[in-house]
Length: 325
Image (cartoon, rainbow, N blue to C red; front, side, top):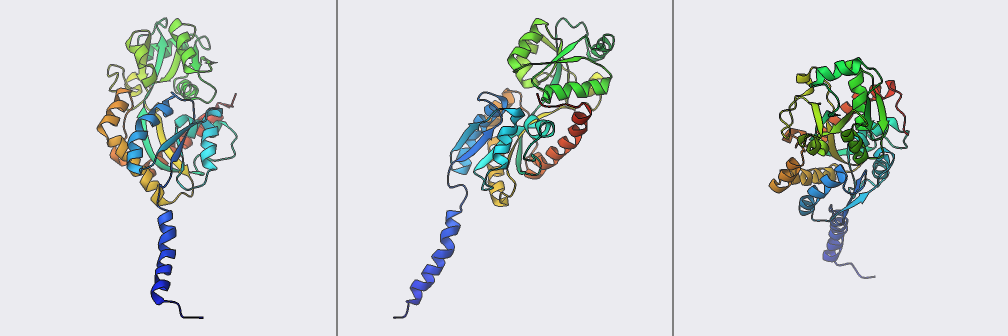
């Protein structure tokens, strides 16, 4: 048998090293982002605004997969069980990744089976009421509720939903009592609130700003540390007399635990680039979203927020004995 050409041997060895590395360049195919809800919902709308700019950064299409049900846990579980290769991504919010992870019995752990990519946006929650409620400010509303325990009602979209947890937290902080009326969706809830069939709701401010601005509903307080730019006349919950009662509604991105740091870094960079794009940021702000400060756009920042929110809400949910419907 003749001797092998040393040049060919060296070339073959080099190709054996370079070949697999080249094949592993990320991303080399479309990325699926699983949305915990239907098309047109808050996370779906947010993702569609971000996706064009993210695709430009990543050089691959983003495929949107809507998977509603069980408080968003079906979508979250789908990603938690996926291969940790960066091609299956979870978009979600405080409801799908915090509240539902505590309320439901799950085969996955939203905190430990997912790795954070980055915080996307935050929108405030506020306390709103039908115009038949006579209270002019939050202090009067609390007094009005205390004078008639369990008579007033607040609309919620499911047990363990943001509106429900917000209402429970408000009751615990103010010593008030009122009934919760469940609805299948936000639209029928708002119809009944405007009509006066129910009296109250804790609602994501960006989704209900039009009803407040048109005078069909009134807002008592924004449940955040600072006033909301889209409704600067509405006081913060601190200013209204119940300091510290914060209920932010935030969105983030996650991948399966075990995804490489390089892949997470590429996804985070694409997310940050999208948030910094003038057209994207303008559209988000017009919808009422608040963009995180640069220091809050890292995976580590989202991990801190996620853990803190679970530690905050787990005792509230357990004490109220909130169970899935």
